[in-house]
Image: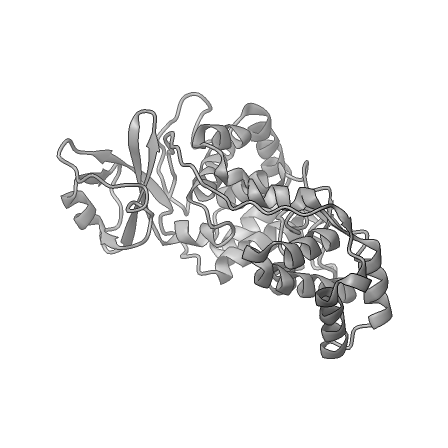
Length: 341
């Protein structure tokens, strides 16, 4: 379903963690040594290679700083304007033109609209312009061992990365990505790379760094496997009646707790007809003009499986619309808001 997104604002807080940027120094890090020994035994990994690699990398303070200040913590206007600007939109149009055959093939096979695929690649890496400068092994090790809130998840991703490197024949010290260890044009985490990456070009090798057919097919496959519903809506702005029920941001969290009629009874009416049988959510953000609301659907939640942020899902949808021509920069246009074109 096509989307017209209005301005929203949301603030997020982060717990702060600090550490000195320094070599891991295995002589004083029993946790890392135990991890290496476990991986070597469990996965028959060469222990000498593991010790050599971990002795070379550092715990990196800048990684922790970035974890404490994610982009989604920015006010909506600032976050939105990173992605919705003429140069990125034009680059998306050029990308769409160049890779239309692969986009349409992925759309036919997986049911994921081309504009959503374009939105994700554009938000994640500016269509390949910015894929990350951090060394992935260093980033994952820093978060796994020095950032307690996400230690469990990133320890698993560190293991997945080492296994991926062995499978792909990569030198773990050479692979670069985001500060969180995401890689390639679609910024797949190692576990996603191993599980959802697809050889879209049928050349016998999966390459999410340079092969755009692989990239496009893999994004579509990821969303499909996460439960994308072919032809269903994503998100629709609502007209708010004067007597509407007041919601806080925490209450208007986008969870699929309503029917279309229930939200209408509460004063929130979609700006165009939507299927009445679908479960829907109400997503709201405080702005300088007051609360602004959207009706969200199952596929909106699927996009959030890529990044668990309502702002992220909205900007993916909006960028895809700008690129595909559903919205004109500076002059939002309502156009057949359908996810299945």
